[in-house]
Image (cartoon, rainbow, N blue to C red; front, side, top):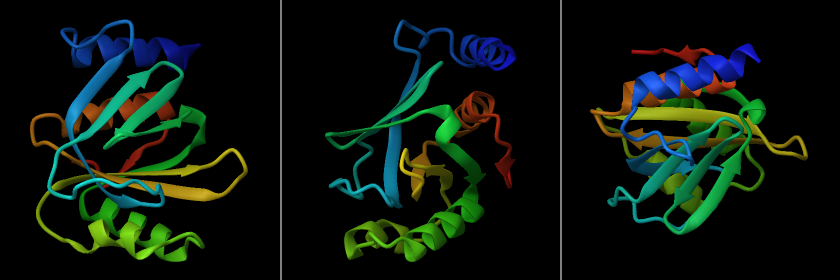
Length: 154
């Protein structure tokens, strides 16, 4: 109950103009790699994240992907996120060159790493590049929703 109340307060304080029936939503994101097989243009900011009290919903290009906050095992930021997701993809049995493509590019960006376990217990990870104007809010909301601290938080 406390987590739900805390999440609601963060959502209200983080962006009252964007809070609606669907929750908080951001669309200035880029899927930079991970274990989710999604066909996205690595140069387009076409990823959307919508956070509701019971789910994290990603739209990776045209492919939807949903996580429950309880499935998230770790959150990270910056180069730490980059390295952790790259390690997760390298260790994954389903890794393909397409999944590794986005992770090989390095630059000074606002990476957000989300590690999770699927319903059948397999590990997975997403590497999202956030815009400089929204990455702090996204990190705070994710931290509140999942109850996991952000490694190397800004």
